[in-house]
Length: 156
Length: 366
Image (cartoon, rainbow over all chains, first blue to last red; front, side, top):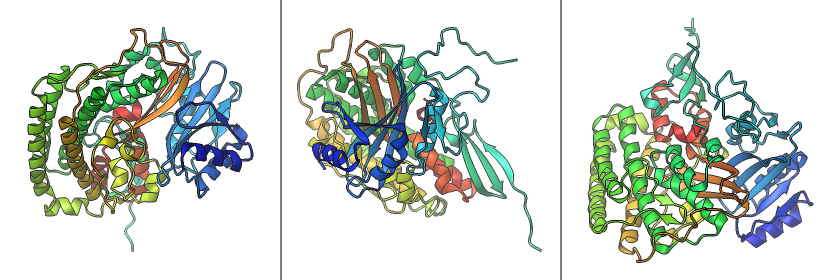
C-alpha cells in the first residue's frame, strides 16, 4: 500500500476515530482520543490490510500545554508505517495499556509513567526502573521540572 | 519419595562479566534451572534525553556517541538524519557514501566484538583475541579519518566532518580482504567444535511470533526467520544503489543468532566494496547555517544499526534547541524479550542467550 492508499484506507475504516494531521512528506500521523486508543490499536493490529504487528517505539512528550504519547507502528509483512498520537490534559493524565496487543509496550509504558507521571491503566508492573528506587523528586521529563540545583550525593 | 528442592533467588549482576555492562537479572532458581527472570536496568541512566533538551542540535551529537558506544557512527547518523528531515537539508551524495562506508565498517567492528565476547562467555578465549585483532584494522581507519577510536562524532548534521585521506580505499580494501579471509578461521574455530555445538544448538529458541510481539529487531529477529531489514524495506541513504541481499536463518536458537551475525559481516563487506569503488566526487557537507534552526514539526527516523532498529523521535518548535529527543535502542526491546522465551533454561544457557541477543546496556538506559 502506498502512503496515499494507506491514509485513504484508514480514513474510511475507522469511523472518524482517527484524525489525520499534517505531516508533509513524513510518515502519516494520526491523532486518536484516549478512550478509543485500545480499540483502535487492536483494529490496526488485526486488520488484514493493515497488520501493524510491530511496535517500534512509544514516547511521551510534554508540549507545555498538554502531554502527548506517540506510538510508532510498523507492519513487518506489508512494510508500511504510521504514527499514532494521543493528547492528554495535565490533570489526571491517564491512558490504557496496550501490552496485550504488543507485549513490547510494557517497558516503554513503564518509562512514560516513571518520567512523565502519566498513569497507565491495566499495566501489570508499574515500578521504577530507570530512576533510583527511592526517587521522590517528581517527574524529571516534565518541562516544569527544574534540575539546576539538583544534586544527589550518596549517603555515607 | 520424590526429592523436594527449595526455590531461591540469585542476583546475576550488576557487575557480572557476562552481562556486558551493568545489568542485573533477578533469577528465581530451582536447582540449576531458572524459573523466573526479571531484568533490572537503569544503572547506566545518564538522562541523555533530558540533557539534549537544554542543548543546541549540534551540541547533542557528542551525547549520541555515548548513547550506544559500540556503533556510535549509527547513533550519529540517526540523529543527524532526523534533524535533516526537519530542516529539509539535502545531503551531498559523497557524504551519503561516506556515511554508508563508516556505518558499515562500524557494523563489522561491532559484530567482531560480538563474536569475541560471545565465545568468551561460553569459555573459549581464542575467538576474543581473533575478533579484537581484526577490529583493530577498522579502528585504525576511523582514527586516521576522524581522530577517534570509539566515540567518533563524525557524522554531522548536513554531511560528515572530514573527508577521507588519500589511500583510504587501498587500506580499506586490504582490511576487508583480511577480514573476509579470517572469517573462515572464525567459523573453523567454532562451527564444528562439539562443545560449542552442544552449548548453542537448540538452546534458547526464540520463536518468530514472540520476537515480533516483543519488538525484537535486527539480526536476532532475522535469525528467527523474519525477513525484515530497514536498509532494504524502508530505504534510506544510498543503500538502494548497491547489490546485496538480506540473510536469514530459520531456527532462532543461539547458534543461528551467532551465525547470522557472521553472515551479516559478509553482506557488509559486499556493500562496502561497492561503496568504496563507487565513491563519487563532490562536497562532503551541505550548507548548514551556524545557528541551526529546523522548522517546527516532529519526525520519527529509524535506521538499521548493528543490533537492530535504532530510532530517534525529534520534536522541534523552530528554535535552536530540540523540545524532545526520544531515542529508541534495539537492546531495550531485545532485553525485554528474554524472560518470554528463556524461562526454564539452565543458568549456564542464560549466559549464552544473553550474549547472542547482543545486549548493550547504555542503549537500554540512555
